Length: 232
Image 1 (tube, helix red, strand yellow):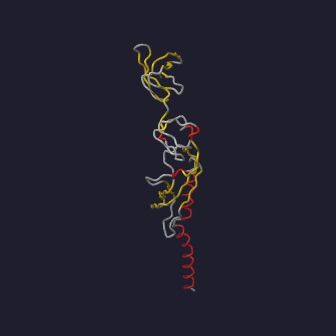
Image 2 (image 1 turned 120 degrees about the horizontal axis):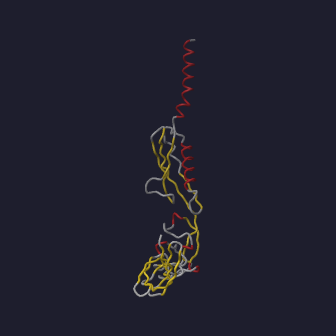
């Protein structure tokens, strides 16, 4: 009887211990779900339409259970194309793993509708919106046509090529020796005058203007070809 009772108690103790042992190991499915949720949130405000595939953790991993996960990108990785997530346990255990991911961001981007020569100012007829994965496009590709129209190409571009920010410069709104309207603003007052531009300038650039015979002032070139001079 004593031997039977001892065996029964041993079996009961073993059955009680088994769930505890199981709970001390990290649920890999929960880990991947947490990483997927992190990606969903991180991509929520991305341009275009995001989608991703996330690799499953190696089923052979035997990680201690974690009370708090920290998820992010390793240094040098970005939320685009072929990338990597780092999942770290910061409470309850100490470990980290990397999960490979493939992220697609489908966007509309600006391309050349036809061959355009260098130093030509882009018009609506010169640009075309196309769809593509932002991860496969140049990092500086323009997504908004309004950022290209009215600007001047630094170099020629072929039809169908993506238009990049560094390929463009603002069109000149003032030419050297041009007579310009000068607007002085101070403390809510506005005074208009005229002067001669001492150089060429694009919109938003600082330009020097001769007002009168010897008075030289600096102001900001405006889109309409005027020069704004203001004080705080």
